[in-house]
Picture (cartoon, helix red, strand yellow):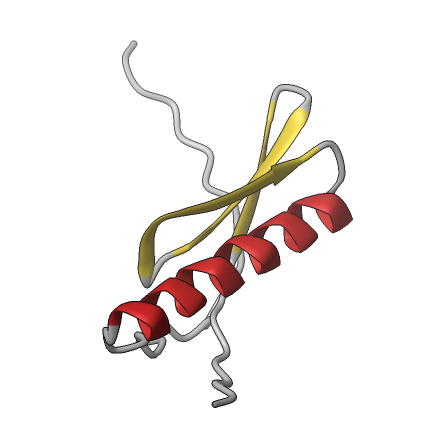
Length: 79
């Protein structure tokens, strides 16, 4: 059975590494030295997650998140 899903992913850079996560799927992460490698890693991770869901007879989650804006936020707190 072929399952197709589309999930928004968030990729962030921390120090010298990139991290990716899927807001709809907790505990599934990707990481890498480049954004491309990070995206490949998260793709492998979500594939394994879905395969495990299917093997266990669990429902494969659909995405409820919709990307509406991409931005960074700067704040200053204190005096």
